[in-house]
Length: 141
Image 1 (tube, helix red, strand yellow):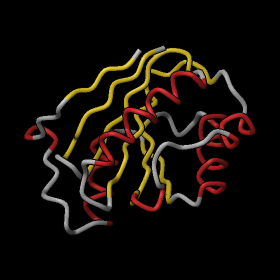
Image 2 (image 1 turned 135 degrees about the vertical axis):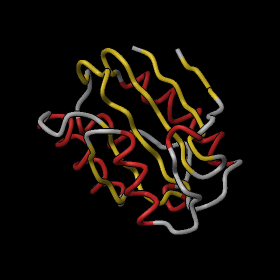
Image 3 (image 1 turned 120 degrees about the horizontal axis):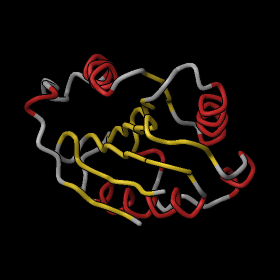
Image 4 (image 1 turned 120 degrees about the vertical axis):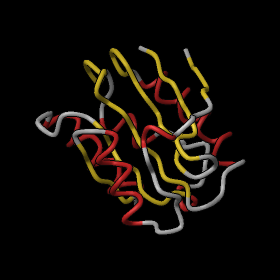
C-alpha cells in the first residue's frame, strides 16, 4: 500500500491518493503528511480522498476512531471521497469515521465530480478546471 499527497489547489485542496491494501500505518503516515500541508495551508482546507486504487481496508472503525489525528479537524472544510459508490464497506467506514470526528463528507465516482462539488460549496476556490491544475507531490511509504 502506498499514498501520494498533492496540493490539487495550492494551499486549499489536498488530494490524497491511496493504492493497494489500506492499513492503519499507511493512514497514519498520510495523516502526518497532511498535517504538514494543513499547517501551511489556508483555511478552510478541503481533502479529496482518492480510493479508486484501494483494494481493501485492513483495520476496523474502532481502531481508526481511537487514533489521534495530528491536525485540527476544525481547519477542514469538506472531505470528499472518490471511488466506486457501490463499495458499501468503504462508504460505511468513511461515514462512520466522519460522523465520529464531526467531518462533512461526500462520495463521488470521479475526481472531477468531487472538485466541481467543492467549487459549488466553497465559492472562494478558483475555477477548478482539472486540466489546468498543477499539483505539488508528496509521496509516502
